[in-house]
Length: 353
Image (cartoon, rainbow, N blue to C red; front, top):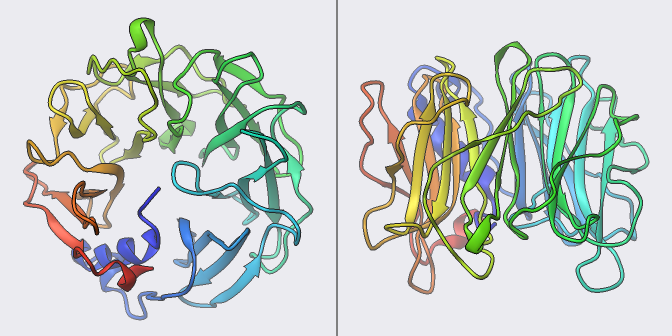
């Protein structure tokens, strides 16, 4: 994903949150080398970050009681994390941190997924454990989420069945994992998976499906079981995008404060661009899509999240020009999308990385 230094962009959004975390004294602001970050606020109000620096996965903690940088992946291990498959980071109820990432293997399109845990707040990390079933091939496009029931679920794509498909596994301690299970054996080959956790142990997982005539629409699956077991999914939107090739851009999910499930994604079906939709019934049905990017300015690589005061934020990278901008759209409490805000101007990418 091209939104490198995304943590700096998200921190820039925090002051828009009114009386929420963005106005808190000592709000963490930092700049350091790295790319493709994953962020996680913990119960103590600290911002935990894993990101890629050189060949390594690195951890930092910002805010009160700062820590790092701490190398997560062992020396000599080269991570394949980046773009559509950044590292993952989750926190169990007992404070255990769990990080996951793909590792490059010798040969073309060969990789595996490794998971490490820290039981001392990120100061040290366990030896890596293999997440996917042992075997040759590609294992990547990893996503994860920690449910309120205390399990961390993982989703990824691999070609163990002869074609890229979605697999899942879960853990309750970061040391032992359920056997990898196939959710869909035939999917788009290189669009990242996405997961989100909601109330009452709910989890959602989104992926770009591959149907007849190269139709590449998204599906969202739901789980309320423990360990997670995802049910047959619902189409996010009938975009009707037929493409002989891979878009290389996945969907993103977020639950609003009122329990509404939101999704953001890019499609070339109809007017190309970034769209959002929402579900009021836990992902069983989705409203008609709403465009976020103006006609003729499609954008790419969206991110979606909820600000401290409940407003929804969608970030994306503009398309066109030598130096794309990073912009955001904010949805106010009345349901109106504000005009795009430029977070990183064209030609000023170095300010965030």
